[in-house]
Amino acid sequence: MRSHLVIGDLHVSAYRVPTDRPEADGTLSWDATTMVVVRADAGEAAGLGWTYAPAAAARVVTDLLAPVVRGGDPMDVPGLWTAMVRRVRNAGRTGVAGYAVSAVDVAIWDLKARLLGVPLARLFGLAGPSVPVYGSGGFTTYDDDVTTAQLAHWVHEQGIPRVKIKIGESAGTMPARDLHRVALARRVIGDAAELYVDANGGYGAKQAVRLERRMRDHDVRWFEEPVSSDDLAGLRLVRERSDADVAAGEYGGDLVYFTRMCAAGAVDCLQIDATRCGGYTGWSGAAAIAAGHGLEVSAHCAPNLHAPVAAATPNLRHMEWFHDHVRIEGALFDGAADPTGGAVRPPDAPGHGLTLRAAAAERYRVV
Ligand SMILES: [Mg+2]
Image (cartoon, rainbow, N blue to C red):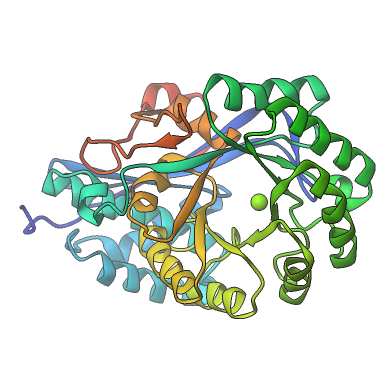
């Protein structure tokens, strides 16, 4: 152990990676994804963290977080996390500043594990041997052929027995096409695989209840954000009237958010995104809140970042194998996971096991 080493500077970059085709869900459309990457150095060692956030998060790291982390002991992650959270008080604890804190927290955890020469999954400790994943994409912009090819790849080629598609198209104004695509998905994946849907808050509560009833013909098991995540009463109403599990939490930025969502009885499974809620440190608190409410958790997006902490979480249900981030992490990092068979094993390499392929990333750099 070389705990006498202190953190030097934080090196920040941002990359804007175009999607492979236009993408949309119920309430948003996009043609590129921006990733903000933080490297924390101590002596010869370097830790790597990232978040999917506007490039403005890079400026938060440089201006607000680097000054309070520089010179800190990389073994003392909770102390550094607390200092960062205090520092962003007036910038807004959640949102872009919280995404920046998340990336730095992950970089410091990774740095600590690499200094100790152990995988992060060893440092955290395993709760199980591997992490179940579900294929996630099925954007509303896809035609039937593209949807079919993507779902068939996950289920029939990679052996992933769970998949999710987006519904709630055009803010819930195209329910007939939503139902057509749910039926298509069930036909493609067969009877054995689990089918999930995500409306991204596109429906009203009673509209969501009516649609869920019709989706029972296709054995939909998971209904994510049927209404806005801010509408806890609406989520609860849908949850109480649904066969499908209701899930939400991807926008959660702090423990108060997750506590309110769980205490409202709004979800059957709490989604947590470590790239938004304060990194691995924030994840662990959120997972504990869910456990205290008798709930399981599911990792939202950034699968390669989540793998070590997901593997360490006793009340984990699964992790999202999200098309956009799988593509980016596979192209820009060495060490990305393989989901064949429907589960991921955290890497044996030190830290989270990923290193940035700087040359491959360079052409996407915006910061
Ligand atoms: Mg979602």
